Length: 192
Image (cartoon, rainbow, N blue to C red; front, top):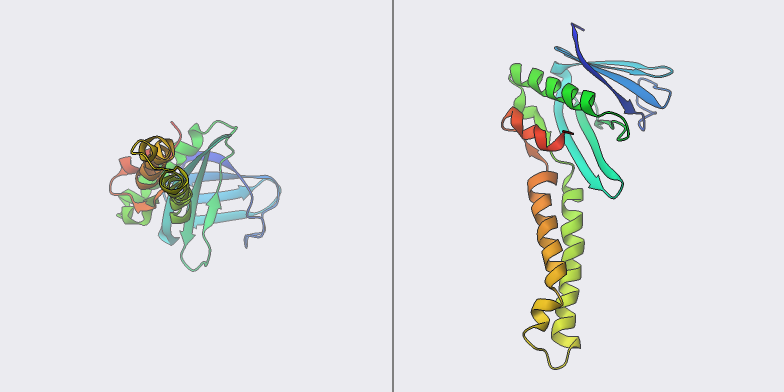
């Protein structure tokens, strides 16, 4: 690898990965021509930029905080390599490394391989579940309240419909996987 640009730590949930990583963490170093992953106890993997078939940056906001992830599809591999930086550590190096990696892909003319968002399933889960709640609230307003008044259809499903709208907006703007058109598109999926 050439001169190292950025490095960060990731959790190793992918222990059975073919390089035989061991330990709790791995160090990921991003260089101009690719990245290297070195396990705490054992394991080493070098990934040149040319082998990256697709890269998807994503984040999920949860009750305990924001979880960041990067999925890297490698040419010749069936499953993506998933990297999770620990959310309780400084995430600045992770953000800088991902910016450097995407910038290197852009310089090589491979920006079409970079995507943002988590997954279609995670994007649709919240709106679908809240849509069921809104349908239930409309059912209660129309059939359980006798005789149904006009305001039953506004007050009872109002708050679930508002939450449904917010979740649908988040799914469409942040969580749905989509190609990055410019380098700035990845900023919504990185820590600030």
